[in-house]
Amino acid sequence: MLAIRKAWGVEPETVWHKDRISPSTDLVVLPGGFSYGDYLRAGSIARFSPVMKSVVEFAGAGGAVLGICNGFQILLEARLLPGAMMRNRGMHFVCKWVNLRVERDDLPWTAYAKRILRVPIAHATGNYFIDPDGLQRLKANRQIVFRYCDETGSTADHCNPNGSVEAIAGICNEAGNVLGMMPHPERAVDADLGSEDGMDFWLGVKQALQGRRAGVARP
Amino acid sequence: MIRAHITVSLKEDVMDPQGKAVHEALASLGHGTVTRVRVGRYFDVTLDEGDVEAARAKLRDMCEALLANTVIERYDIRLEALTTARTGPVANGGGS
Image (cartoon, rainbow over all chains, first blue to last red; front, side, top):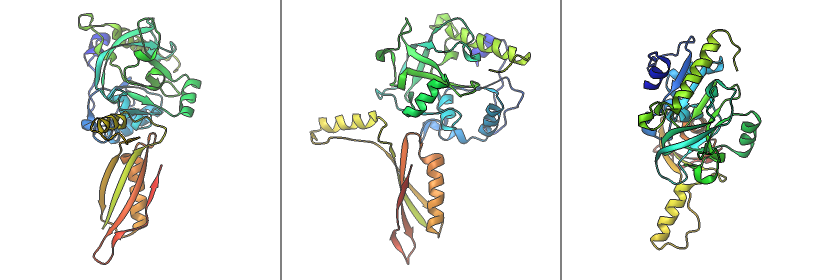
């Protein structure tokens, strides 16, 4: 990914879906896309790819896993994150810039100063759903990481591009090591192309992971 | 051989904008007496199985794992035995 190359100065390794994730991996990214053409339900078939077995083990051992867009959908279908994605409320594929309010500052995913990020979204199935009890648990465990908002950070309904419950754009698991988000931080790393706020995200993640490698306690 | 007719539908408390779009389209075609539309999915699955209960158990597994997202959907399985001696529906059942 260009973003990783630009922010970290390393070439990420692409792992074939029939291979295994090495346990010594720093970060596993399930990127966006249209796995299996979004057939049946987005991510519903990819979640059974052979590689997912090692991803689940890796996550269970505390490894950092990031799912972006289709990656988030796969994490939900694989039950690594709670809830489900539905078709956007307005029934359109939405492709536009949004603002995200960062709801927590104590995760590797949010270890940077900016509290509002400008990033793009491009999805037809981004309407996050969870039942009322599940939503209570998300809040109690502080699992809501990003919400759609305006430039001032207000999460009024007109800022919600897809109808997600409580304007949720990204969540983590209880332990905080697995993050799923519908927006694309990897598409916001160039000011000429609209926003560099994604660099804050990637540099923050890098710093947190380096701290982890050096023996700093896991979140 | 057993043929299963599986319908997967949204749970009641889940919003269905697709159903709403279809409802509005029907209204614009003049069908003003429609009060609600919900859109689901249908699967036609044939199994090389003789035992109905074994087939039903497998189909339930298929629904739980793949055919339905049980967070937002429920499923209904209707079985049909496909043999020359015994054709026709067998006892049905749904789930989730």
